Image (cartoon, rainbow, N blue to C red; front, side, top):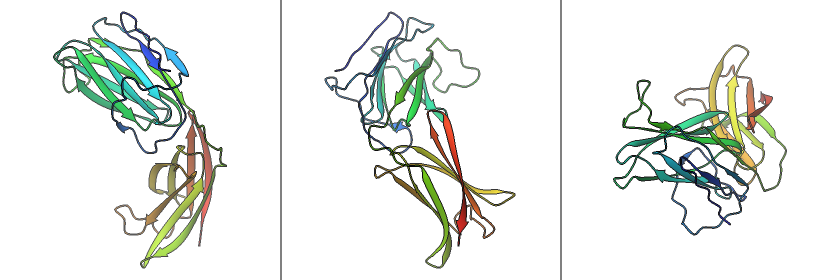
Length: 239
């Protein structure tokens, strides 16, 4: 069931169902108007300008959100969305008929947020005059699959004559993982990734990459972010 709410200034409706899309936040295809999804959250968020409206439908099965609304024709909507570990932005021009839409995919596990601002400026910066904005709307993406233990191991291996730090582990599919390869004084590589649908994750740090890992590296700090909470494992690199 898809449920919508509209108020004179802004309405946001959330529909969620379990599932997975791994990876970062990227543009996604629009959901069909008649698509059905179980509703888990509904909220209305007020805006400072009645000229802008926004409807939002979240799909937990695909970790996506379809946004649409109205505003001043040929003005711009500046979207900000993300979670506790980072955010992304997008500028969308409002059509001549006063409508706009945008699809987002790859929402992170746990709490996400999205809000919109409207301006006549196609390239917003710190001097931009905003003609309407919303409060942050927050929606929690939940894992409906099996709960796996958060584990990690790291080892030096040789691939095609190159020294490689191989880091692997397990977790809940879609969990956000960050890796820091370091020794006692310096961090050499940092990378982030998502746990795959198999509940596993892994990364090879190859000697000779643009940011090579020297032989002095002896530890990988593996962090999992879930609902804004960081869980850290300091993993020695075995040889």
